[in-house]
Amino acid sequence: MAALARIGGRHLKSVGVINSSASSFFSQRRGVASKLFVGGLSFCTTEQGLSEAFSKCGQVVEAQIVMDRVSDRSKGFGFVTFASVDEAQKALMEFNGQQLNGRVIFVDYAKAKQSFGGGRYPIARGPPDPVEVAATTTEPSKND
Image 1: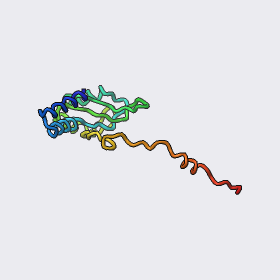
Image 2: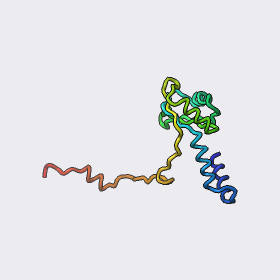
Image 3: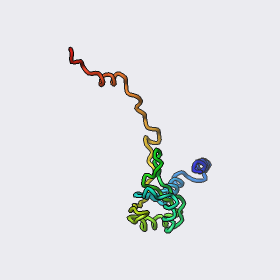
Image 4: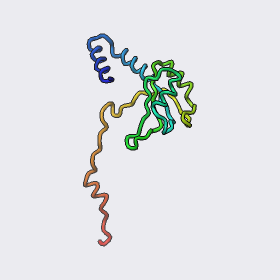
């Protein structure tokens, strides 16, 4: 869905229907301003439970809990996206410092995702040089 939106946005920009600065401002403003970071979550908190709790403040578009890939267990934080900026602000004021499932949670506006290396992949160092490995593992003999 997001890929289709990007492709459609590029097409509209190339045709000249929308300019790039206005559309990027709108998407960044809407995406970041209505998305909240929620930290300090209990490991037993589910996405459905998070959505139900925050729905008291307005329409929750998405509730996501970040999971560890290896253990498939919650990392203890997540994100809640609201339909409007006003609802997100209300949830921030109401839930920050409050308890949810026995843990005090911390709520703040989500920051834009940072890309490493300017959007490129990080440079891999590769395997160590065999000469360096041999030099560090060989010790002078004491029999000389």
